[in-house]
Image (cartoon, rainbow, N blue to C red; front, side):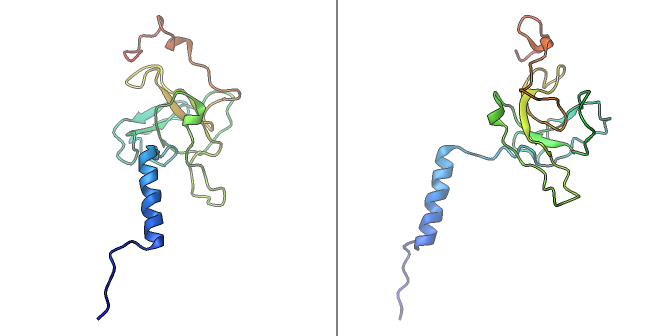
Length: 153
């Protein structure tokens, strides 16, 4: 009769320690850039969002409006999250070898996506495919304290 040990093997112990360390650091994936459904049709110049997108950890799925002087893009709507700086916006990007992949091509930047509505003046991770973000995005004047009519300032 052989005796089985309940002690974890080296590999199992390593996996457990790595998983515990990841949980302890609080580094959860925000899934920025993950494809999602805004459940609305909109023109390239019209911004829309779904604030109840189950496929997004933040529940925010957006398709921003495309700014003037930005090249046409086939980038689809994507999961986003609130941010305070560009480094908060590390996200999934397009696989250039997959012609059906419609994720963001050029990366993400932190900026105001909407100047009205429930996301009014909130900084979100925005795909650079939609914005002219050389040097970072400026907060719109309409979102300045004392000027904005947003409820969340």
